[in-house]
Length: 386
Image 1: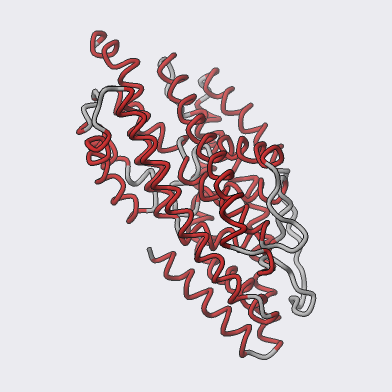
Image 2: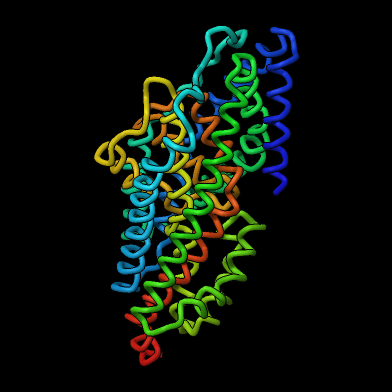
């Protein structure tokens, strides 16, 4: 919650600077904004390489069908959530956020004093392919040396995120809002984005309701009872903004939903890293809003957006447990597949962090649904084995 407060302060400070400060102040802030943007661009491939490698290498071995089906259900849920979110967004957003807002429009009137290029060591797709090669290789060969290297690398990148990049985000956000305030588009943008955030939260609730109703009916369980059992996890995630930090409460909630202990102990920690349907709903909806509000762009077709949704489900594997991890992992896709510029990326970060707690709560609450299904398929089998 402190991150959200700092984010709001950064937005307010940027607006005040853009409206009332002299030109040199705006240019100084935009210089800082540009440097932070370059640091973020440099870090994204490293996040993908270390986190996804570590996530794949850490998948439980010897679980066979249970592992495969859990991963398939998680990815399918994420894919379906993102697709439905885009279909709803493509209908609702033109009524809520008209294109005239000019969000993400970089202005030539206000630029920084200098630009500092920090090229990444490798591209986003190269990092993703390398992550799968190393992750699968480490798991297959049981290479403890490489496993330790990527574990420590993940720790280093997590420290960079939590101690440098995340604390600098308010300055980064302040830069883009100062530019929008200076060119007169900020209040129209804020008005439209408020409506987008409300739409995102409603879509989270509708998605969870659909999941629990379908799961309850097909498994002969009461949907209301299932939802009630998962409420402690939902409200805990609202406060922690981290799926990983909510695991103890999620475990307790899933077990109270009469899921067998072996299934709960396996599915919940795994899904905390790979099941991100709430985050996908947010990213797809907000990305569509930013494109709609950018002159000359607009919302693409489903055929054009679907590859982005598919890649989101992969690239967010083992997203950092720190708040904002999913959007940081997705920045590479936003720039490479959707062509976002730095101003649009900054707006995406602001939008995502503003509702991060609701997206995380949707993620962990949906884990309960997957646990119920896995218990149906494998619960008796594991109980007999034990």
